[in-house]
Image (cartoon, rainbow, N blue to C red; front, side, top):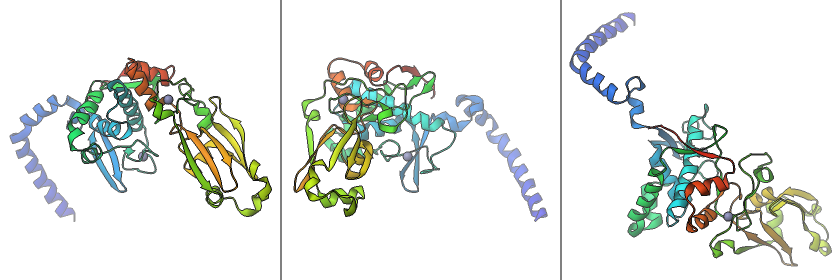
Length: 329
Ligand SMILES: [Zn+2]
Ligand SMILES: [Zn+2]
């Protein structure tokens, strides 16, 4: 084994000397063009390792990744300033993940995945074509690419650190929610703020009906915990509301639940609901879509339509933050 290793080393050295003679000078030129000591790997700019399916990771430039996120997370027909606000929030989120020392347990090979419940949604160009149709594809793609390019390098910072720029579809017009009321911990820049200017159809109430059986099954309640049929009127009781008026705590039979927990178990669009119990069913009337923390996408659209720019939109929903320009490639 040793002799063989020596042979290999000798041949390797010989090849190296010849190779340096032939390509040495061009290689030095290439390195200088790509930023000297930084090496060729960095010459292509910030790369995102993205998991697009279990076990399938692709690598793509950050700004290209952001086009796929904005396309997936916000309607492409939205005002350019709303799209720009979304692009800056998505960039801040992505860079926070990229700069983290450890990669998430869910995808140890990738900075991010395309699951909106874990990271941010993302779609490929092929999926954009299917979503928008071939007629709209070019104009929508250019629009979103413009929102990403015109904000290139811009991120949201609070006290010198990249923020956690959470966002949701619609607060239903009630205003955004304090992070502490949803996740149980204070975040100085994620406080409830007023939100007006939603398109009217976004403030409509969605009505969801549940049979008793389905309701109890989803909550994991068995029959013994239930009150007698005569007491159904008080079956669901709201115990506490958040500062903005959403359901914080409620009681179902003998079970006390957080509003966010009930929303998850029943798959409700938001925690902004009222409940009505009839002899046949349980009726939820729900406003808004999402956790209601941070940037409200339909509210951002409303602000943009009123002439606000993306900076004004972002500093409204993320109180006390500033926009900074990062000089990555
Ligand atoms: Zn993920
Ligand atoms: Zn809103």
